[in-house]
Image (cartoon, rainbow, N blue to C red; front, side, top):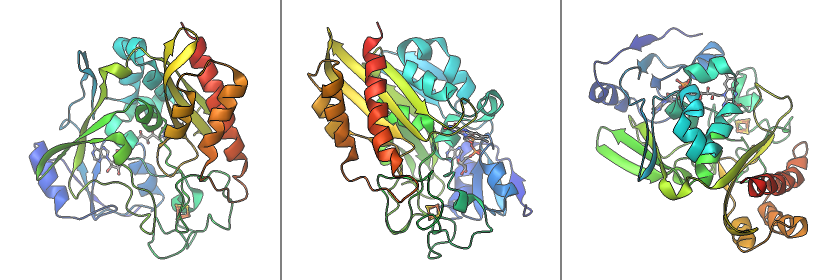
Length: 332
Ligand SMILES: Cc1cc2nc3c(=O)[nH]c(=O)nc-3n(C[C@H](O)[C@H](O)[C@H](O)COP(=O)(O)OP(=O)(O)OC[C@H]3O[C@@H](n4cnc5c(N)ncnc54)[C@H](O)[C@@H]3O)c2cc1C
Ligand code: SF4
């Protein structure tokens, strides 16, 4: 680990100003929240900031349920949100996605903001022994393209990067039309979660639309996403403490045994949390009949590309959608 200084600003404005002068991603000055991702990357020498700005105590950690919907302060921990009675009752998809993430110890420490901004688990990104990784070293190539890419993405990829976005929470939030509240040196703004993460294109090292110094301050989920029949299906190599090979977040508005509206997002397959609007449109008005669901789920494969070891994900993600819709639709 390279040496760094830890700054503890007295308030958020001081933190924003301090971080802003350092520039975009992987800057010499970086924020740290729960530290569960950042410290791992420091230990592996993947990230080498000279200064870390602690967000501890500077951001809202509230969990509020009101007529407008749910508001999660950026500093609320994964554990607090996962077991909050209002979240469990009204937005169970969020609770399920969080409880399927990491371990109790990590969830006790990790925050909402940090979760959305955690870095990819692509092994070539996380091991500085590999010389080629455009995300870690722009212009160096992509070792995953011709290497072991079982974990990598099949949707939203580019010739420069095929890394999967790793957050389970972000997939559930994408399905629920969440909005991210952002604070920065220039003021506050809100954006749909769907717009937070960038596609890799030819700049895979730039992962979000955040400007220098900006922080996530809260996440809001609209009230109309509450109370839907939902399910988070996570396919993984072992039952806990493991990232998704493929996941499907489904929230259904049912009309008797028919689907009035489906909201579906995928994890483990996209370079960002991946909503599937064409699948949703095909499921609207459908009954929970396997052949019909299968036909609609096939639309998720449009534009998908396998890279060898991960070809199986294209079929698996369709099956995950069907299974998750069946489970959500069967809920009362
Ligand atoms: C063993 C292990 C297993 C895991 N398994 C899973 C899993 O199955 N599913 C899953 O989704 N995740 C998993 N994770 C990842 C875990 O969820 C993240 O490490 C965690 O959510 C990060 O939150 P944090 O508060 O610790 O962030 P930090 O590590 O403190 O920060 C992460 C990044 O976000 C930035 N940041 C943090 N907060 C803010 C903010 N408010 N505004 C702007 N920038 C900010 C930091 O600068 C840093 O770049 C796992 C982690 C570990 C260690
Ligand atoms: S997929 Fe992206 S993160 Fe992985 S090696 Fe290629 S450039 Fe790096």
